[in-house]
Amino acid sequence: DMGMNYLSLSIRDVSSLLKQKTISSLELCNAALKRQNAVAKLHPFITHTPDLARESALHSQKRYDRGEQNLPLDGIPVAVKDNFCTSGIPTTCGSVMLQNYIPTYSATVVRRLQKAGAVIVGKTNLDEFGMGSGTTDSTFGPSKNIYRSGVEYNFLHPSREYDNILSRIPSTALENGDWYVTGGSSGGSALAVASGTTFLALGSDTGGSVRNPSSYCGVVGLKPSYGLVSRFGLISLVNSLDVPGLFGRYVDDVATMLSVVSGLDPQDSTSVSSDLQNLKLPENPSLDGLIIGIPREYHWPGMSKEIVDEWTKVADLMEDSGAQVREVSMPHTQYSIICYSVLNPCEVASNFTRYTGVGYGHRVSASHSMEAMYAFTRSSGLNEVVKGRILAGNYFLLRENKSKYFKQALKVRRLISEDFSKVWASGVNLLLTPVTLSTAIRYSEFQNLDNRTQTATQDICTQAANMAGVPAVSIPVSLNTEGLPVSLQLIGQWGKDPA
Image: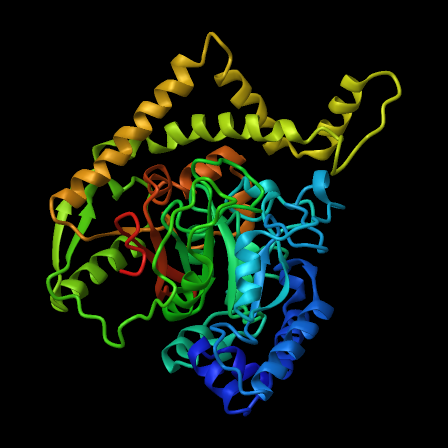
């Protein structure tokens, strides 16, 4: 099926086929929609938007027919995490609270993608309101990793070496009721890209919610510098840490997407202007003269041997390619999870006061009082994890606790940020670290941990970059002997996302 093969190409390659009219925007869109049906049992999407997608594809086709060829993503299928507002399309955040909420406006990043010609094929699954690291805590059910699932994905990896690994491994993970998790909270977006239903996807990253599922699903996941991409229309979790993030199968595709969505937005007071609009990556990037830091504190206890081995191997490869590799110290990293566990619930508690049953969203009527309506609405509309964080945040913010917890955590956050500044000041250009402590784990194993423990263990390498607001990207480097993706993370200086 030719349509399938087009879905495995890079955007640059598929765009040139669209220009040459080898394939039309509508054919590409239909191939993506057909692929959605083929992988439906893995559950990447909450809402499918085939009619909107075909309509956008037809507009794109007309532009190609008229010879207009200047939109960077013209005709390219894109998926959107279901916590970005999309005008006229349900935006649920994976929660009962918003399961019937249809926004009247679209997030800035969604509008920019559409303006660039992208075809939105659906809204992807997530942990409720983005609180989780497995995409297992969604009102609409979990997403399941395509690796070892028995769902065909070899066409996305046209390399013989992959086939050899994959052909030796039984892929019965789904049949026996157990499967590998996608990671989270943006697991639906990572899966949508990994399974070939779309070229790109939007996610959000508060403590690792883009890089974690990218690493488990074997795709590229970028958390941009804080402020570089507008948060307007992204339903807030933790305002000071949230960033819209980008998924693709190729680094180059993600760079193109970044050039489309970044830049100043007057509707987001934290956004900054950037000159990434015509971002083009060099054909053969050179590592000569780059100084790569390996933070010794990222050797966490419990990290799997295969990840440590891959980390060492890639560091050696970088050195062979002309980079200098040196060990650096980031002494405050060890406190970042504890710090995050205070700051995250405090901002959540504040943000979630808006879900009252008044104005929009889920409402449970209670005749006897307004208070009772709020209480019934919130207790039935939000899951245990969300309620737990609201309670914790309100506790940390009590007058007698605020300076002991919240203000203390803000000071620690500053120290974590300063660790990064010191490393950059010493001449280091990039940090190379793991993304997660292990490759994707089975659902049964994941469910044995409570949400807070899952997040603490899964976000341990990713979270400090959110504290410091610096850009970080998860890049797949290999498959392990079980046929699961192994990825590593590069962390850069603020605003140096293209590097």
